[in-house]
Image 1: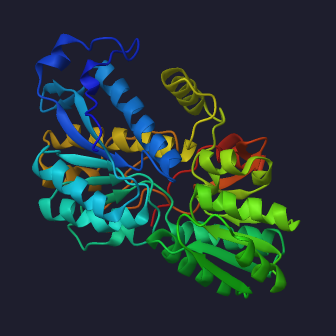
Image 2: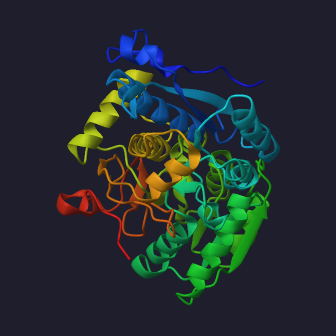
Amino acid sequence: MLSRVFVLSLLAATGAGGIASHPVQAQEPIKIGLSGPFTGGSSSLGAGIRDGAKLAGEEINAAGGVDVGGAKRPIQFIERDDQAKNDLGKKIAQELIGEQKAVAAVGFANTGVALASQHFYQEAHIPVMNCVATGTKVAKQFPPPNYIFRNSANDTIQSGMIAEETVTRRGIKYVAIFADTTNYGQLGRVDLEIALSRRDAPPVDIEMFKIGEKNMIPQLTRAKEAGAQAILTYTQGPELAAIANGMEKLGWKVPIIGSWTLSSGSFMDLAGANSEGASMPQNFIQMPSTPKRAAFVEAYQKRFGVDRMPSPVSAAQCYDAVYLLAAAIEQAKSTDGPKILDALENLQKRIEGIVTTYDHPFSAEDHEAITGNIPVWGLIANSRVVAAHPEELRGTQAVRLKKKP
């Protein structure tokens, strides 16, 4: 069943129960689709999407809303749970466009859902802020004018980082790749194989499995017998836990190094102590490395009553995406899709975000806000993600800006 609508114009700065100012209530809300996997195996990522976006929306509304040509209008999210299912994602996109009249969309955790759904927004000329899905094709699915924008680190970036960390920094050349059979797993696997081949370290074993696989003992046994000295992963939290727990049952301890999903709360909760030491690229680590990040973490914890965020990366990226979209609407002075598109490609306002400071993050040819110099390395310690290389979050390294062409 589709979930209820969250009307953020009814939220005040003092908390979820307050009432926004009268000028905000008097104007027609800006309807934005907010979709992600709020239930199921990817729900940690979905919680980050939903909560990060809502926190940004509440802040914007409490400050008066979005200035659209002189009229302050509140953001209204239309929230939908895609359950990480491609077909459901397509139905949701059609509903948000046709019935709900959303003027933009924020979300998408799963590459397959994004690729299956985005063409409906493209055909309707409705901008999408894809703030989590990392498949390399996601932001390049359509030629210009392309309505899909992204502020997560794509898999070309991540696979290169994984190979660099494994082969160059750690000196490990015999690896096994464990990837699920979804679009996310298989596109990531291909990117990772390319990155490894460039470092003369082709995998000694490749294991593929369906989402929902709970027994990884046969796959792990083959990888061990092939001489793998590390497991490189491209899958989701429950399957990652099956890998880590299977390794413990075999008494086989080699590093788990993989894509950003290793940071999900579901992996740490299901794997427990077996998740310790797993490492992954991160656009944001739940640490007060800057005043802006410290304030964000504190606000998130207070608003949603948690200590450890279920997916800090998802939350930070989707928080930033809402501010980027709001800035584009203000610059366009309109909620018309082509005008928002033009504003995003020529964004004049400098946005201090959680992941980075966005200074002209997009162009007509480049809809990727994140370049390879921005992510850092995370490491699981005591069921939390910390900086694997603390120097990456110190001084001038704490906020890394997008490389310009």
